[in-house]
Image (cartoon, rainbow, N blue to C red; front, side):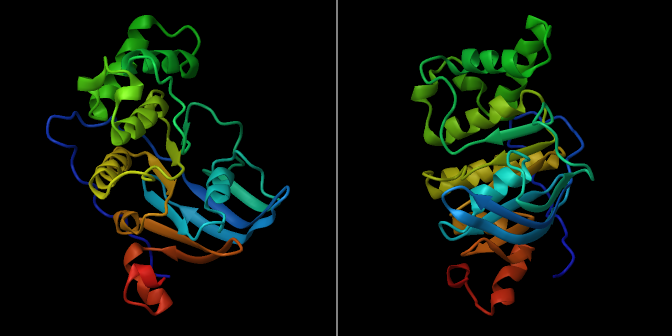
Length: 256
């Protein structure tokens, strides 16, 4: 594979403050195999690296093990064989340096967004954090993710793209060094999906490492690195998006 070169990050959208800088987490997986009860072997001998402050997209057909790989890289599942290391160490219990956004909404749908994030901040931030600090964190993520004008809107009444960004906002309250997202663009129209990827690119520009799974081919060219799983959970490709088609001897992503 050619050496990976991170793409330049676009500037924040007009009117949005830049996100605070931070040091992203480096992830290294070596010969990871994962057995899942009732499903057998889902991943087989997968090795890859995720650079700090990069946007990595995990792609592949349904049942190829994308979500299992994501949760294994996140340290939520221990590999059946092989190792996953965060900054050279075995991952511990997920903490404040770690964010995970599942496919399904986990925010309280009936509360205004600002109140929902305030509740999430109380759970995620250090015990004893002052009310002023919690409020400042909520205002920061609302502004950074372009949701300040929706602060008093019930979560249920947000658009699909806004709800996805609200889920990200909840995880960004503690400024995690790495953010994992399972199918964040699923169900979104192409324009909204592109806007969400732009938001995630802003996070990498501020230093956060971002890893996500996707079914959407349009997400692949927007990544720094693509990890493509073949059926059976084997690694078919890991490298720059521009080299994906040549690696398979095809001219279009749909042919991969």
